Amino acid sequence: MDQNEEVKESFDIPVAERKYINEINRKNKKKILLTISTLLLLFSITGLRFRRNLNQIRLRNINIQNANNLDQSILGHLPYNEISKEKLVLIEPNIEVHIDMSESLLKMRSDAKKDGIFLVFLSGYRSINLQEDIFYSLKSMRNQIAAERARVSAPPGYSEHSTGFAIDIGDANKRETDFEVEFENTDAFRWLKLNAAKYHFKLSFDQNNKTVDYEPWHWRYEGSIEALKVFEESYRKLNNSKNL
Image (cartoon, rainbow, N blue to C red; front, side, top):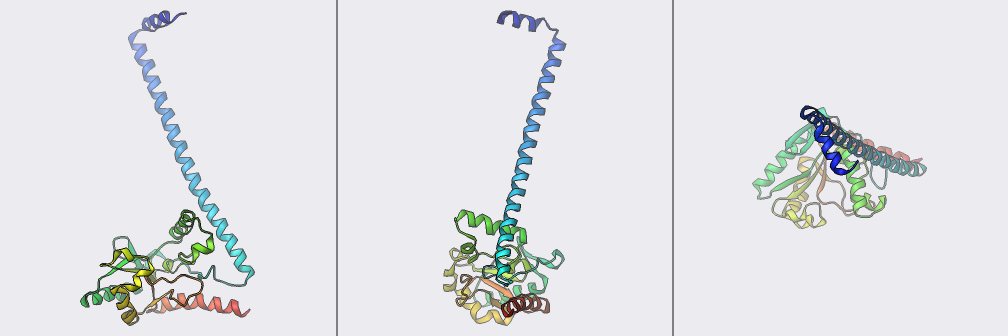
């Protein structure tokens, strides 16, 4: 059958039947597109799960190496449990902190403002899952091994941010120093060094820390019984492991 005969034959089909056939074809195309979209979604979910499983294997390997040293810390960071959501409070968009420290933190910012200092809250509570993404994603972007990355970011399960008692602070007039060592040269940092202790805040990683890089922006709260228990328990485990 030549092309002209095929065309002729197609027009010999009644109009109603041709419409029905076209409708079937359209439905089949939609099914194919839907199937492709579903497969892409499944591949995406599988890829995410694979990445999380790979990250867990990496962290497990670090734990195994660490256990051989009888040390509860990992790459200079101490282990912390994730705080329950019921104990978190939103102090501004995208910034959650432990309810125990919220009042002191806001008062510190308010009092700093009276002195002409404008503190900016950069990061508060971070879940272990978010910390995992930060630790491994940025490590890959910077082509760093885990030990190098850990100097500037805690492994998941070892971040003070997961307790809700840690806060990263910047200077509103020097935003270019956010998360940078240069923050130490700002009015905000100088004010914090003089006044943060009054509100029960302590610099977590100072210049004397030999395993974690100096972070002048990272402060932790030690002004409640629960906060003290959280940090003292981690240091107690570390000291006990060293004495074994």
